[in-house]
Length: 224
Image (cartoon, rainbow, N blue to C red; front, side, top):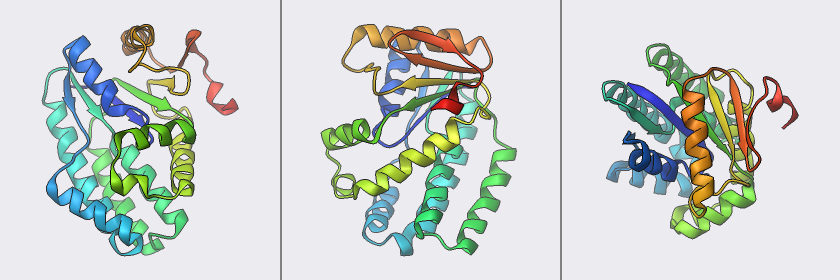
């Protein structure tokens, strides 16, 4: 069964957190869907976004749908990114002009159909971080097709992620302050995150975690 989905902008630390949950909580991880065809499409997309945008987004949507189906048939599953996260990119692409309205409608129809028949996780973990933090991590991992992307693209992406996952409508949510919490370098922060996840799996609502601890505030996201 799909227990947890980890979300966040590019560079937020989604994959790392899934790896930690595999090691520390014996969960079965499902990761960002990288394959040879995906890499080829991504490279072309970054060279010509107008031409390759819809192709890329539909390819990832279909793969995500199949991945969710597989995760839900696996005991104690945790997933790196969701269909809602994929749709974040699509909304941004439309605003930036890389998707025409008719292309957006085609994608949205596929997305709605697949979402209606896909299971929801027990907990959504959203790692919220600033553009500065995300860019520092992007530069550290050194993917050429990411490093050359203009800063304004990442700024738009962070904006749309926050709009999607900070509106309080995503069920049971744990929001991690990714600027304050460093669960990679600091053992105390990793323990803080794992404890918060354990607690939030057995509750409902919107929770927020920073260095001061776990908070439950129904409308906190309206002030972010």
